[in-house]
Amino acid sequence: MTRAPYAADPATSRGREFPENREGTRGPRSEFQRDRDRIIHSIAFRRLRSKTQVFVAPDGDHYRTRLTHSLEVAQIGRVIARTLGLDEDLTEALCLAHDIGHPPFGHAGEQALSAAMEAHGGFDHNAQSLRTLMRLESPYCEHDGLNLTWELLEGLAKHNGPVANPGWALSELDTDYPLDLGRYASLEAQVAAVADDIAYDNHDIDDGLRAGFLDLDELLALDFVADGWRKVEKRFPNTPRDRQLRELIRSQIGVMVNDVLDHTRRNIAGLETAGQVRSAGRTLAGFSPAMAAEERRLKNFMYEKLYYHPEQLATAEKASDVVARLYQAYDSDPGQLSDGWRDSLPGAQPQRSRHIADYIAGMTDKFAMDQVTRIYGNRPEGLSNV
Image (tube, rainbow, N blue to C red; front, side, top):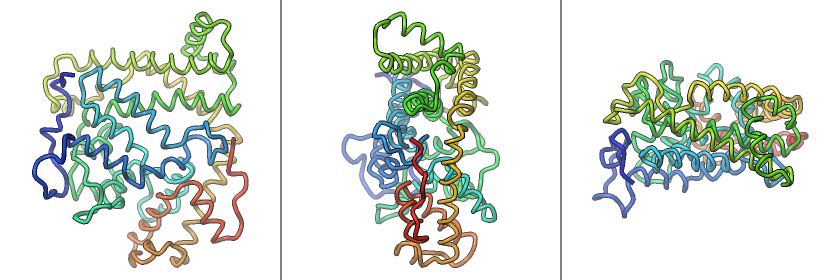
């Protein structure tokens, strides 16, 4: 497929933080393909299979985790990128890496870590994604981190727009390797961001209905969903309800993707370079105003009925307590850290506390529960909410 003039081009990449001693490209892969492969082969990416998406430590095999969510985001992102003539590999790599900094137990774990780190700069999962990829995940002998391209790192830092006031983690990384935080990111990064919205808006509905936290009749109070449901019932009137629901999810994804394509095409008409994307002063890839309003209503519904469901909140409180107790244990007795982390613990603050937060942020749900059980003697109860 012909590359659009406003697409990121691996042949003109700004390069990597650390020079790599090699001649040409290793094999047939582009620089962005190498980024994607480094992410997929990383330990941090593999750990996503056991980290919370919506439901904590789900007993059922059919609920999404951070890993399956990231794969679904990548699928949607590639479709949009291919249709617009963008670099599919950079888009896919951004989609796969966007949640790598999430601690165990999703946003409940993040809130607990942020509270524990309040005196030392706080904690932010997006900045932690970059910290993990640039400093913590270090399989190479020549340098720390995965040494990903500037375009990949810039996209992770700014996929939600320019960063006016970066926290300590992103600020430190930007000082070492400037990511032009004040301007907008590539179209590939913007596509990754809206693909994330499309994926979790719809797949969280799927999981919420499956778990019984969402009620279809209440969901159909949303005009956008009701319109889709009527079309499904008309096309498949005698099909079992569970298949109709899955068809509803698929059709909603399609409607949202087509809206993004139409709206983005209008925004990028006449652009001739990737630099013009970064200088546009606004997000170019995204929903139309009408769809954005529908998507906000859907999100509000999901917060009320699913994310803030009393059972979800009760489980999140217990999950937050696990993370808080782990931080307290390691802070008061660093001997509880595993060997490699204990041996490299800095002596001075804030580096000491940030080192402990790095350790906890890398944990899976199961490992966090195992560690709090080992340290305190009692396994947390009520930490599976489905």
